[in-house]
Image 1: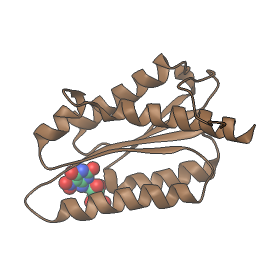
Image 2 (image 1 turned 90 degrees about the vertical axis):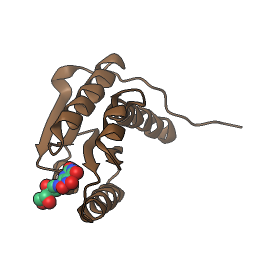
Image 3 (image 1 turned 180 degrees about the vertical axis):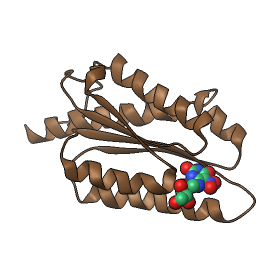
Length: 156
Ligand code: INI
């Protein structure tokens, strides 16, 4: 059986964008740090890494669509933090961000990852932004690194 699987390595010439929703920036800044750290530690060259900032998670799919259409990037890592409050706003923003990232990605042949936290509390967000539950920004970057290599392996 031939197993086709991506390896966790970059050549150094891949052009990658992180799209970050600034809302809850105390959390999302840590997700960006995690994503950047993972990019560099897997062989990426910092000059090939762009950080695109949008106001909140709701705007991520819109910037993602433009970034995909620009054809400037080999892969795109989305990060943000939607934290439940007292109103139903959370449900609308988290659903639109998730659906929007998936539907923008479907139309393009480029790896995109969803590192947007959707948590019930600020504590859960802190846990996932570089403390006891790891760093979801880092995981989102590792995902696109694997998918980039997988696509190359599938084309061989
Ligand atoms: N945006 C977030 O990224 N996280 C949130 O928790 C959040 N809450 O709770 O309101 C949030 N709202 C802003 C939203 O993403 C848009 O920027 C805003 O609605 C303007 O379109």
